[in-house]
Length: 161
Image (cartoon, rainbow, N blue to C red; front, side, top):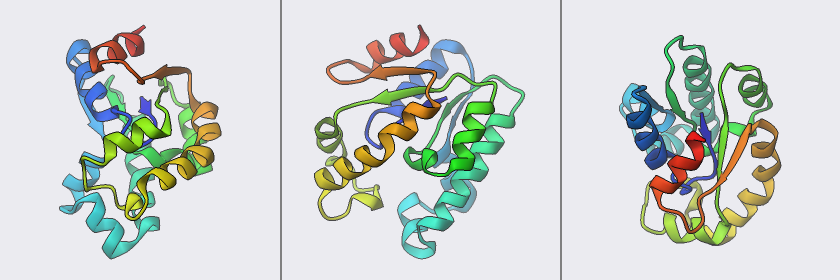
């Protein structure tokens, strides 16, 4: 299970790890978009953040309950809900927190426009989110892997160790 802030590379690392391990990849954002027929941005804009968070929780619980070994990529905000943190801690899953400095994240997310929480001032928003979420990620993490100044392949090697 990979957790971490948006832009940290969870999807990229998850794809590589999935291929290396021969396990299916379950990417929460992709699953939500496939099931709803809408993008994360569209869900936020039409239904609001609480509706997205409910879908996020549903997907998380379903993925954790799967009997098949999988590489799970959780949405960045999954740790905000105490029930999700309890589920992550109780699950028979290794939770790896991919971590990067907020400025690294800001540089990465400027390239994509699908992150509705970053409209306006991405750097300031990411710093605020980092301050709020860092202790929550730490609470659920079995391992912490820094992605700063590392290639995706180097990150995957660290995750698999």
